Length: 610
Image 1: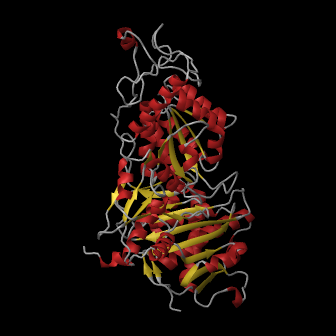
Image 2 (image 1 turned 180 degrees about the vertical axis):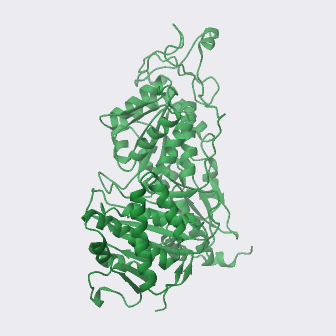
Image 3 (image 1 turned 90 degrees about the vertical axis):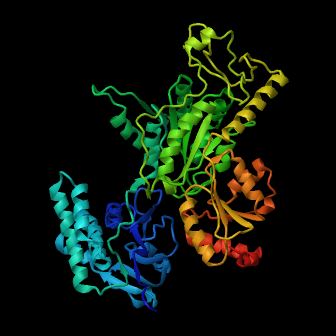
């Protein structure tokens, strides 16, 4: 088997033990390639325990700028004996296996179609360090040094990164530099060149490398949020923690006074209750959680919907049901969030595709919550939230004004002959509201979740209830024009087939579309960015004989939502489902659609005229 050859286009996967200190070394490897101007996509696949179980870190190097997972591994860095067979099995034919060769391995543990690269890392560390913890930590840096020699990473870039990482800790920086150089020198002297190479490029441009949760937290600050109430849960905890960091920087006065409130509540139910209470009093407030938290918040979410109080929930989705796989990614809360709470409820969902949209939608969610007087869900997932992504810089306008929606001031109340909290005065379904205490005798001073008439007077009269529920539907229709609209990409040829996708699937989907086109399968594509669905979603489906719906859950939740809300024949929507907890790959999408398109008779696609 001929060894793989590629320049700036391959996948490296590290297999480590959780808690071994490998994370910083693997990030050093990824960032060094980025600093060489070469686009990368990195993903951390880790267990839900503290230490001891397997963890993986995948770095996709893509000179073409593909940011989704490709599928397959070209270079495996196998540092965990527990997952040895699995890690070798993932290697592409002709790929490379890098491992610690201190302990001899029988030939039967290798494959005949790969190149084996053994480096005696443990032996080198034992000869250099006496402390057991140092031996483990510096072994990680040594393998980065060896890889830098094999792949052509600029050592000056690594030197700069180590200087930045250990600023003010020169002794530690020097120790890491020594370990890096030890690994690099050994590989240069003992290992032959391989076919995978890195060459300095300028393809990164002005893009930034940022985690989705941090981007969403900064978006909350930009959107005017001053209150966060939350309860720790993977994978959303870092969002609340990032919000606190940004508030210390941007919401603290020169005299040290804090212009924000962050409360770690006793549970998820309490956290959303605090958010709704703060929002009722005029603050912009949010919580960050995941699927199990949404389950617990349902009653209060219903209060927000029915009493019409703004709230924002960042749902960083993970694999369920129950505890499920808390450190794995899925898009499995779509239906849970869309219809959260008992009774007839419908909620606005925003579906960002990357950290930039996490920032943009994070800020916009607070305007929408105020404008629509309801809960807005920002639907991230673990892949976006807890991984660093390469994306365009955020657009920050210091003159941005908050849209507070229909809020009556004291002067407006004085001039009004009456005030009806649930009156629809202009047909958009959205009533006017007041903050408590705006006027000494006029406006709203309390709210509740029981049925009432247009003037907020308690009643269980059926006609009044129906009138109110119909107005809430009109408001939901109004939301269609306020939420981010879908983005359509037209195929190079006229085609009767389309594909719908959303969220973190986007990066892999864009690459898969190019591969499918090479296979002769042309698809118009529509990325959905919000629920309720813009009318363009139904029009897109009506314009195609068959539409694939690609999502990362078992039950085709977006497909279900589309068929229910748009009145679409389910037979026209073909599900393409990936739900093993790892981020979806371009290879999976290309293969799955290719197989199903073949069964749908795609011959007309190959005969269409440009």
